[in-house]
Image (cartoon, one colour):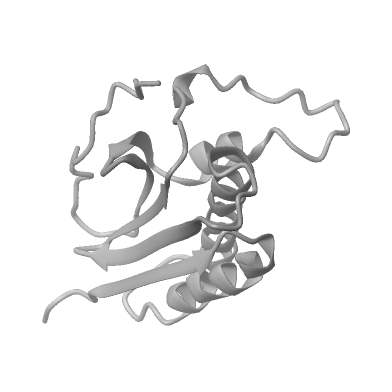
Length: 158
């Protein structure tokens, strides 16, 4: 029997009002995984969180709120590997230079990249087709390896 295979490709306007929609799509995908042996509700929450955090970063930082741009997201599952890609048309940055947040600080921002790294098994950001792509990978169980499909050095030219 073949493992579940899912691929969703979404493009939305560069507006935060679409965050909830994209997060819910990720949640629904997690809840429908028949072969996933872990806690589906926890996985659904984690997928929602990384989708909304990464999309927020694309909207606010990469696109600087520019309404003429769009956010492109792909969610795929193949061979027990969940891959989420968020494409932007921003200037890019070196993801390895993002500091660990100070949790005693009450600010409501500055934790997204840390959260994404904590919840996912692999996080890369690289140049792609005139913009950049953030790829977040999570192993869902079984015998697998995470392919190094992207430059793992985390150096993303400015």
